[in-house]
Image (tube, rainbow, N blue to C red; front, top):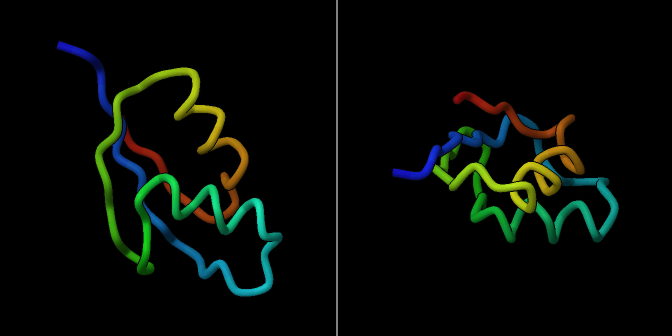
Length: 59
């Protein structure tokens, strides 16, 4: 079974750059406090790194 990570949106995207807002949306996050479970791939890790100031990650 593939490893997964849980990504939680902790801060609002208001005032963020458009590419960061799009990255949060691509992760499937819409509301603050929402958590999604994603496969732990380099692509997902890169997306999380791009918006690391907005999200919290747990293994």
